[in-house]
Amino acid sequence: MTIVCDVILGTRLEFIMADSENVGQKEKKRGGRYCVAGTPNQQSCQNSNKTPGIRMHQFPANPAVRVKWVQFVRRHRHDFKDPTSKYTSLCSAHFEESCYERKMSLVSGIGLQMRYFLKKTAVPTRDGVNPPTPDVITDRMKRQVSELVLVLINLTISLNEM
Image (cartoon, rainbow, N blue to C red):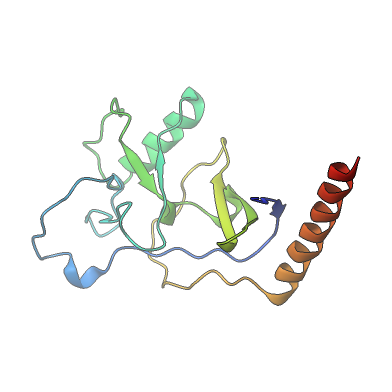
């Protein structure tokens, strides 16, 4: 039996950029998505879907929001054209914390898992680099989810007895 419950919680969300020590070294790209954004010092962002703590986001289908994303990228990459590939992406380091909906899921056998969803109206605004910090699930959050799971289990048992 798998129990999944989503609870929207307001935790602090931090982002990281790729390790700047390895920027000058040539590495083989092995598939995946890479961030198309540049940084103020005329370098590429270097983040990919394989960078720990980074999530990649496709350009939106909504034309009004898409134009804002393209304008953001063109601030540091003047040659950037409107993306035609479905693989053109921006990384999570370029979005503010308020651009995300956060949900905590409890999956039996796995435990607590924080999930992040980019809002459909989110627009990238961050140019800088933030130091890495892990997501913290507090004891209070664990208790809230545990209480909710107990209610769901009791409800499931009651329904099964009918």
